[in-house]
Length: 99
Image (tube, rainbow, N blue to C red; front, side, top):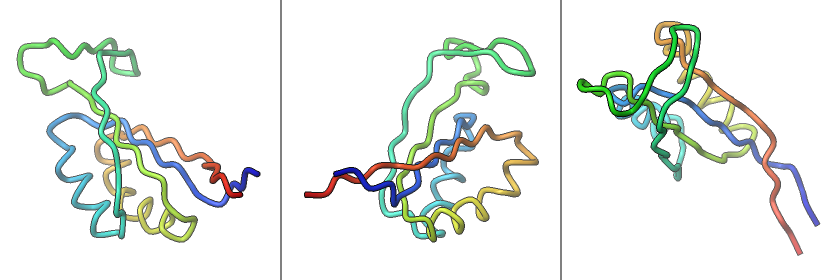
């Protein structure tokens, strides 16, 4: 049986900002997360690709699944960066399978 009791948070973040995101997440109580490398994309500032010389536009996807209470703390911790660094944040329910 599926139970949608957890929250999945995904943050598309510039590579150099990843350590700051991790620190904020851990301070907010995140015990586990995954970082996924991206190849490229397109946004309001145009196309970006991972193979650029400086790597400053290389992006990673930070993914964590937390309780609803923890999600509020994590999003509050990320909120200043959401505005100042134009972070793309996706929040969705996460299914937990129980017997």
